[in-house]
Length: 196
Image 1: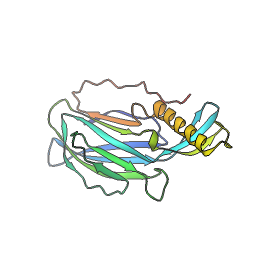
Image 2 (image 1 turned 45 degrees about the vertical axis):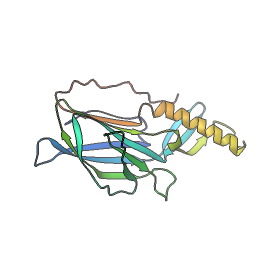
Image 3 (image 1 turned 30 degrees about the vertical axis):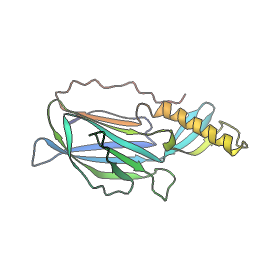
Image 4 (image 1 turned 90 degrees about the vertical axis):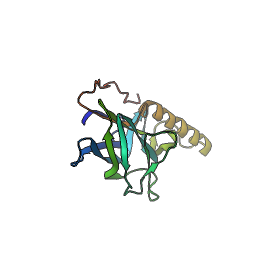
């Protein structure tokens, strides 16, 4: 299985690395490990600057001619498997610890499970998704006066978070695509990455 594409929209906020390791006792099964690094992202917006982190995010997989034959018991309190009765595709939620207001952690060598090849060509797409409510601002400079009412301040922060979601988190925050050698695949090199 080879890496076909990897892209992080906000690499300071989130950096993802998937490791797919062939099992030694079989030709068609792979162990799936993930490394995640979360911190703050600083961006220029209009005439000001914002710093933000994530309270939570979701890791989802789209499997084509692959299935999970084993989902691991995770050894991290920050990441939990969400069982969805309506989908065979697994989703994990990554949430900040109670000691922190946002994700500023590093998760390394987290075994997510074992996948098995069911046919050729095959493809695995992993995406980290986040929404407006997941954004936590750590600093905002030069966008508005700070002597406004708390209600107006909250409304402006919500609008700013929605703007960041629309410009930085769409269609995903981070994505990695793996596939078989015989897969007909064209990388998507056109990603939107600035807040202009």
